[in-house]
Image 1 (tube, rainbow, N blue to C red):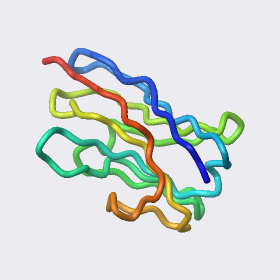
Image 2 (image 1 turned 135 degrees about the vertical axis):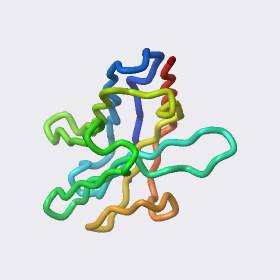
Image 3 (image 1 turned 90 degrees about the vertical axis):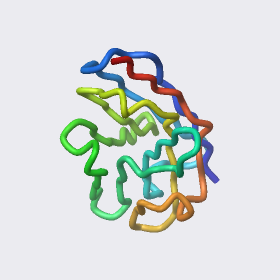
Length: 124
């Protein structure tokens, strides 16, 4: 099975950028459909971006469309989330996730493997 470790979170001013990384070990990420979720205290985990194993199809939450980009570097076995034009409402703990299914999902319960999370704080 695959193990996932996120990095790249931190404190950034509104309008700035961050790139989150999700490094995998144990198995190739190309075998999985992938996603980034985020969560703030007291709220459910929210789908941010997803990447299907099949044809590399991507999808984004409306709130991040045009600002965030999900990608996969097979050589490094690492998934990324490039976040631009950050807003205070993007503040959350961000998690990467993987599932064997050829299609990704917006439901957190559909994913079998999770990283530990990385905090992103956007100051206004």
